[in-house]
Amino acid sequence: MDVQVLSPYRANLAPIDFETQIESLPVHGVMPAELHGALFRNGPNPLHADPARHWFAGHGMVHRLAIADGRVSYANRWVRTQRWLNERAGDAANIASSGDGLSRTTPRQEPEDGVANTNVLAHAGRLLALEELHLPIELDGRTLGTKGAWNAEGALSGAFTAHPKLDPRTGELLFFSYGGADGLGAQMTAGSLDRHGRLASLTQFKAPYASMVHDFAATPNHLLFPVFPLTASAARAQAGLPAYAWEPSFGAYVGVLRREDAQKANADVRWFRAPTCFVFHVMNAWEENGLVHIDVMQSDTPSGFTWPDGQPIERTSGTRLCRWTIDPARSDARVASEALSDLTGEFPRIDDRMMGLRYRHGWFAAHGDDNDTLFSRIAHIDHAHPSRADVYALPDDDATSEPVFVPRSADAPEGDGWILAIVYRGQSERSDLLVFDAMQLSAGPIAIAELPHRIPNGFHGNWIDAHNHPIIRAPQPSSSQEF
Ligand SMILES: [Fe+2]
Image (cartoon, rainbow, N blue to C red):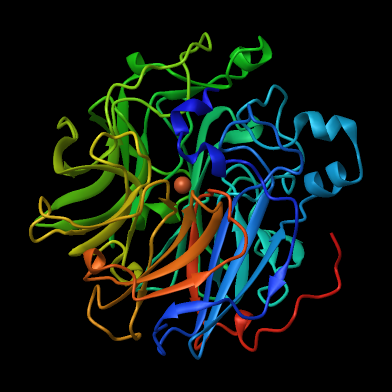
């Protein structure tokens, strides 16, 4: 893989080689008193640095920035999956195969054997590290220690998306899986876990073809499965070619499943043709007047992947926020796509209380106007006038990770709260936690917590509020579990 395309993020692609905890970080500005909880962030952090590695590869490392009474503490830990333990123990075979599913040439190993490197969130009183081809791994929110694979009392048997959706109306965690038995098939599942973590529904269906399915969308009445031609092929992998590759001739689809039909063992998913394009992440979806709308970060091709023969894909476009519209009553209709903003970027987030509902505010990590200074800005889109984004431009050489929204209070209006972003400082090779008024990004951060080291660029995370999540109440020093 050509990591050059990720420059200037390249300097922060390298892993860090330590675990630590810091009781109190220097804070500049005024940390809002209402912030009482912790930002958890996950990302790949290989035990063995390899400059040629793909960004997506490596064992998960979870970083926790806990905030209380205006003070900020920090801790980080690798997720101790079986692969991590094996590699740590010096198992050469596991070193060779560690890291990711991208270069997988053999069928998936044991269900719990993942790298848990993509997301971290709380559900049903559990802190879960997620990676889309394996079971969730449960962590201890206080120590960041690893409790092990979590299968919802035997209800889950394997792959579980790294992008489940918490339904704010029902408290259910909606999820899906793709890849089937070997991780490279067209079989998919969809289900839900109730607010207690018990399986409430599980159904299976088949996609038009086998591919990487990173994200999905949900509304009160529908589950929506965008499928793009980043195809998966066991035969290709066995021939030493990429397991996942770009084959646009397969076209793109959106699978539409009524949530009431998701109670059946075999789901009747209807597939709507979509523009041939690629999407890693959905911002949100909702229904109105019988139509389903999905806001996605859309590009012409998948960044960081190749053609089936392994040749790199030349970049043909940036990734832009687009709105898809589907009429579920007309199965012959194609998905219509409309660009909402000229900004390019990734890692879209919303006020999660609006998941699946008509919403107004979204945020994402934006690139520079030249589309080359990656993740150099943080953008707020007000869907009342989406072409006029509120943008904060980071200083030169800095780069943001996913901006996470935190409401001012449980009943605050949509968008009333803060944006938290972990920002890499290129000049000093450190990272900071930046806190913004979510409605005034361009005014700059209202508080900055300084880390003495950098947090490697990673993927996703979530704010977990101390008031309603006992898993992080009364933060304590890390246990004596040694790295
Ligand atoms: Fe993702």
